[in-house]
Image 1 (cartoon, rainbow, N blue to C red):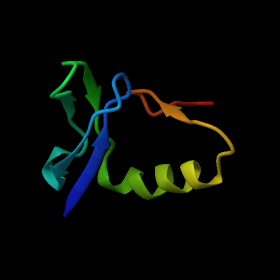
Image 2: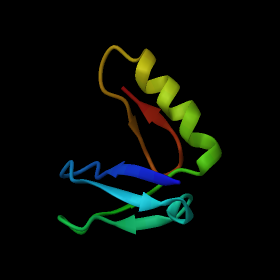
Image 3: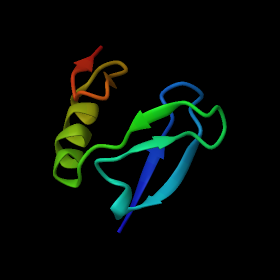
Image 4: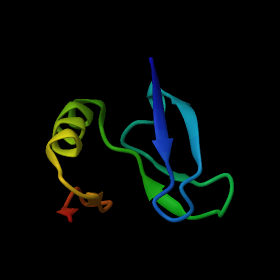
Length: 66
């Protein structure tokens, strides 16, 4: 399984292996460090994004804004 991730700072996207879930990674472009959610949190995050009428931002503690 692969995860598509996007840097919250520069928007750079790339594919990660599932073993990258629940880990902090560094963006390949801008070098910002951010957390990839756990695999069981991903469906909930996708549901929230689909229901949103604007942008939603999720911090490294799982709190959502927007």
